[in-house]
Amino acid sequence: DAGVIQSPRHEVTEMGQEVTLRCKPISGHNSLFWYRQTMMRGLELLIYFNNNVPIDDSGMPEDRFSAKMPNASFSTLKIQPSEPRDSAVYFCASSLGGQGNQPQHFGDGTRLSIL
Amino acid sequence: AQSVAQPEDQVNVAEGNPLTVKCTYSVSGNPYLFWYVQYPNRGLQFLLKYITGDNLVKGSYGFEAEFNKSQTSFHLKKPSALVSDSALYFCAVRDINSGYSTLTFGKGTMLLVSP
Image 1 (cartoon, one colour):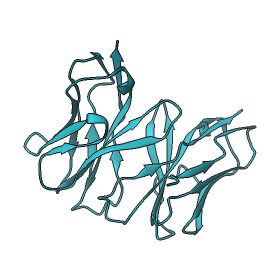
Image 2 (tube, one colour):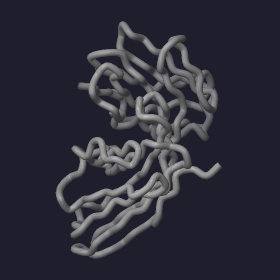
Image 3 (cartoon, one colour):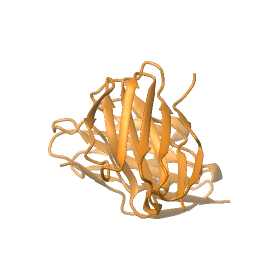
């Protein structure tokens, strides 16, 4: 049974470049979450989708960040332009249902380094 | 608002001894509570959850947690620690009576089990 799949696993790029992170949720899951993890700030929720619709994007840091979910099996998180302070591990998670009583299943993350 | 506190940054225990990782929460209504574990370079993995019913919840890898409403706590326990339990542990909460549809995670507690 495939889990949440994220790509790439590692990304190193220069400041100012566009970065696109990809996520394939578990089949049948209708909630999808993007998180960012850093030593300083811990685990932060960036955006939450339910049935492909963005429900809560209050955690998106600024307009440089955008997320889309064009269908139930794919989501992207884009940073344009990227800055060194965006360096972090970005996780995608999915869960069944929108009531919050089901566990979230996490991918193994994308480690992003902006030089 | 919903919040969760993990008062210890790190817990040290010898292999074979019992372990406890503490978690307290704050919600205006009733909580859904979760524990997750994170190994190096991996995403968070679900351990156990409390939704309703029995206050003692059993989960993966021999872990259990006790929901205590009067103390607003949900401590993670294991009777006999293994070196392989060494990892970062996160407690998370959702207030089922609020408008929040997402989890709030604690900052994490590093568990180190010595041989």
